[in-house]
Length: 631
Ligand SMILES: [Zn+2]
Image (cartoon, rainbow, N blue to C red; front, top):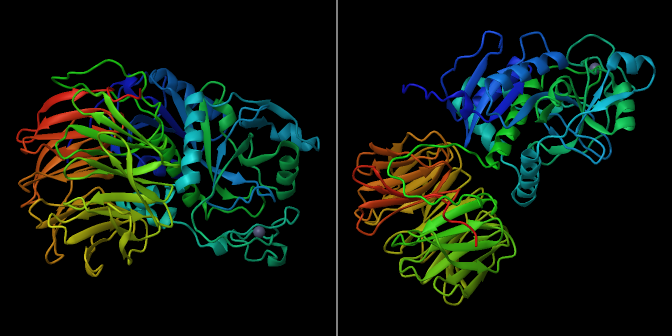
C-alpha cells in the first residue's frame, strides 16, 4: 500500500458534517482518496476524516456518538471552521423524515435538498416543545441561505438532471463494489417496505415493522417505474426533537410547506454556510423504523458527491517546468466540457460543451481557431477524422454533425438516433462515421450523404463509446451495460461480446496494428482484449477513479489513459505493466493522444489545461494552463 498523502489544513475547502455513524460510513465510502490526519488544537474535540472527492479536498466530521441535535452540530461546525480555515462551504448530509403530499410525491430513499425561497433560506427552525404544546407551530427563524457557489451548482445539476438523469446509481454501485460488506446495511430495501399510512392513523403496537398495523390505512400510491431515487428541492424543517407523529407532520406541512424534518441543520446554518442534503428514511410519523436508514444515508451521500462534481475545484498542484499563462479568470464560464479530442497530429483540441457548441483550440498557443455552432442541445462527444479535416460532434439533440475543421462549416447532418448521441468515431478512410446513443444502438453512417448504413443492435444500455479497427472492418462499441461488442462494419454482424468490466464502459479504442482493443470504464480499469478472438488479455489497474480517455501509441506498444483522478498513466500494452504516472493536472483528464512520432503524449483536462509529456520518461514538457478560454 502506498502511504496516504499529507496535505495542509488550508488545502481543505469543503466541510462535510453528519450526525450518525451510518452517515459517516457512507461519507467515507464516497471519498476518492484518503489523506493522513493533521494536527488540531486541544480544544477541538472533533474527529476528522480527510480526503478528496473529485477535485475537492474534503473534511468529514461526525457529531459525537449519542449527542445529536442543534447545539452539537453548531459546536462541531465552529471547531471545524477554526481548524480548517480554507473551508468555503459545508454540506450537512444524512437522513431525514419525509413529508409526502399530493404536490410532492416523496418516497423512501428519495433525497430532499434545502432550497431557498424568497422568504426563507431553505431551512426553517422550529422549537418542538413550545410550538407543539400550544397547538400550533411558531416558526422561530429562517436561517441563512446556502452560499452562492452551492446555489449555482444546484442550478447546474438540475439542468444536467433534466437532460440526462442523475448519476446516483453510479456512485452507489461504485461504493458497493469497493466496499462489498456495505451491501448488508446500505442496499435499497424492497419497495414492499415503503409504507405510507394516513397521517391520522397512529402506530399502535410496538412492533418495529408495522406487522400489526392496518394495511387498510395505507395511502394508495402508484408504484414507480424506476428504483432510482427522486430528488426534491424545497424547505426543510429543523427542530430539537424527532418528529414522529403523522398528524403533527401534516399540520406543519400545511403551515410551513416543508418537505423534510431533521434535527441538526438549524444549529449550524448561521455560522457555517451550508447546504442540507437529506435522504428520506421514514415519513416522520409513529410508524417510523430504521429499515431504510442505511440506503437513505447512501443516496444523500451520493447526491453530495454528484453535486461536488459540478463545482469548480481549486486543487493546486505544484509542477515543474510549467510554461503557463496567468489568465484563469474565465474558468468555469463555459460550464461543463463533457468531452475533448485531439486532432491526429495533436495540434488541435476539440471540446464538446454543454453550451451547444464545439470549440477548436490550437493546442500549442491556446487560441480558439473555430467555434462550431448549430446543435440545439448540449454536445456530448467529439472526434477528428484521421486526416484532421473533419470534426464530428454528437449531441443531446439526437444528431451527429460533421464539420469542416478549418472553416467551421457544417458538412453533413446525421439524423436517426432516437435519443441522445453519446459517442462518435470516423472510419480510417473518413468515409464512414460510427455513433453510439442512449437509444442503446450504434449506427454506421455514410459521411458524405448522411445515409444510415447499418444499425448495431444488442446492447442493453446507453452506448458510450465507438471505434473503428485500423482496416475499417470492425467496429467496437462500449456500453453502460458494462460490455464491449465487436461488429462487422460491412454486414452489421456481431462477432464478440467482451465481458469483464464491473461498471459502465466509457470508451473503446483499437491499437494501430489492429491487434488490440482497449476499453475504459467507471470501474477504474483499462482492459485490453484480443481483437481477433475476443479474449481478455490484461486488466490495467491503478487509477483511483473513472477512466475517461484512452489512446495507443503509433507503434501500439504503449497505452495512455486519463482519469477523473486527474492522472494520466502509461502502460505497456504487451504486459499490462504500469510504466509511468503523469501527475500535475488539477482537474479531470478528458482526452489523451500521442504525437505522430510517439515521443509525446498530450492530455487535456476539464479546466482546459493541456499538458505535453515525454512518453519515454513521463516528464512534463510543458503546460498550457487556463489558456483554453472562451473568446
Ligand atoms: Zn405502524
